[in-house]
Image (cartoon, rainbow, N blue to C red; front, top):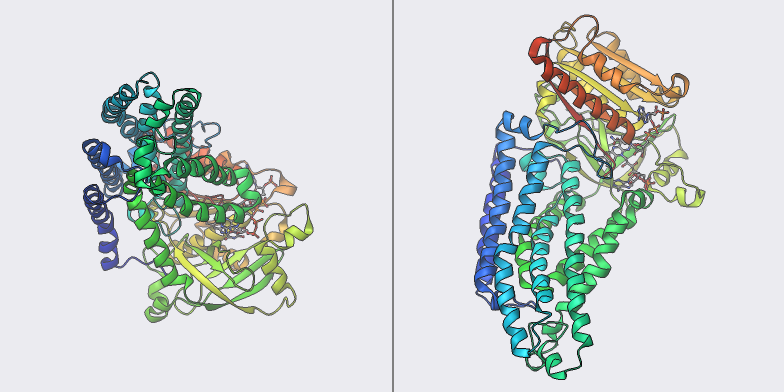
Length: 595
Ligand SMILES: Cc1cc2nc3c(=O)[nH]c(=O)nc-3n(C[C@H](O)[C@H](O)[C@H](O)COP(=O)(O)OP(=O)(O)OC[C@H]3O[C@@H](n4cnc5c(N)ncnc54)[C@H](O)[C@@H]3O)c2cc1C
Ligand SMILES: NC(=O)c1ccc[n+]([C@@H]2O[C@H](COP(=O)([O-])OP(=O)(O)OC[C@H]3O[C@@H](n4cnc5c(N)ncnc54)[C@H](OP(=O)(O)O)[C@@H]3O)[C@@H](O)[C@H]2O)c1
């Protein structure tokens, strides 16, 4: 069940990307020489350009993989690539621009628009010849550009389908956070929508011109469902060759827009399940349809498709395929506790070795499916206790947001599960479940840090509990100047702090002079000043911290944005001062849940 990285597994994982790229590139090249089953077989008309297109696409993937590998192996490259160009958040996008992000954007755009260089001359000479043959040359530029823009979609579609979910091989190999991958996925998806719209509109303008001609001779030279064919050729080849327009139109006008609309944050947050199932089912349909549409679409989808299938196969085999029994309990004051079975590997290892491991599964997430609550839904939770030896991993959760209609609210997963265990408040109810995880992000700076500040809000406390307990076991007896830990937890209501896991940590921290736990009750004290929290920790007025600082933030969106902005500012200030101060580095980690 666990996603551990043994040396053998690490080697296999690291070789997957180069092996996959080589295999897919070879297969795509090979297929251009084999019988083609798409409605429009690009390589039959433009074999040379089709193969250049494939070669450049795989060169693009390989160069991105190389860049991401350089980020993993070289700290200076990682630091340079994650440097923010400005502290300001770009409106609408909701992100800051980093050097690496900008570079990748420009690189993908260069390959996408660069394809005009080899597609335009080829398409132009083909369509000009066809136009002259039909004695109708004036509208051929429209269909030329339809072809050129269609090849932009090949590239963007191939990139957009690369899996970015929890088990994503890209995340594992390149240490990328799910939220970074999802952001890239969104940028590519929106770009694909624009490219597909341009492609569709240009073709529509060609069909409009075709419809308006009176000459049947010209009309016979092109069939709108697949303009590479004349009516006579289409008759010989059969209805299969007429699928180019319908497959493109269904994907571009119906399926992709519905996927994009249901994934918009405002709709996704109201109805996550509609977003999720629409995305999975429609994505499958789009893959089939665009592969029928043109052959190059299929060649470009290959790597993502293989990774996607492998991802699902792994999940079904390792987690979704077997049920375990978990214990669920009302933990009081709005909290619920899910106790998972103890980890098999840890049971074998024994207690002490696992608890002091240099890089335990901190910040790990488990995905829970409980058929008695919903057979299809899988919900993510950050471990509040990672579990070691015979002590099991523990998840803490609160019910999701209130809904206007009580009936609708009671159908939500967390509310349904809460209601199941509310009947018996004392006992933990055994419930059959399928558990995926732990999925653990790679955060080397957490383990290298000398001083940790965790600023968390509401349910965001869960991940911080794990970090604090691990820190207490490792560093609690050291002087505060060299090692320190501060946890600031902002909650609306004081009663929220009355939960066993928090009280145990508070008791532990009372005996540790270099650890602080500050609970901020916003209803009584007003909003927490996060800028001041970060500044006060990184550059305290009295005394000084020596070494590296790491900031963890988890909580509502505004809190995440506020802390991240404060960190970006402090980092700029630290750079300005050089290492005149005692702090030798500042890194942070934003645990983003709003996927
Ligand atoms: C990585 C991660 C870690 C989390 N850790 C915790 C935790 O430790 N404790 C805790 O109380 N909550 C945690 N959450 C939030 C928790 O998953 C949601 O509260 C829960 O899924 C809500 O389900 P619902 O159907 O009752 O509510 P809904 O009203 O349907 O949804 C409430 C919110 O949860 C999101 N959501 C709903 N279903 C899912 C899903 N299947 N996958 C992802 N997001 C979903 C929606 O976008 C919405 O913003 C975490 C979320 C993520 C993504
Ligand atoms: N890691 C994550 O991404 C994460 C973690 C936890 C929760 N969430 C999401 O956030 C939403 C609410 O979660 P919740 O019910 O646990 O929290 P909540 O009760 O709404 O808020 C918790 C605390 O955060 C404070 N807060 C909110 N915005 C802030 C800001 N901009 N600056 C400083 N303090 C701020 C609140 O103060 P005020 O009273 O002043 O608002 C409150 O004290 C849910 O949708 C949940 O899924 C996300």
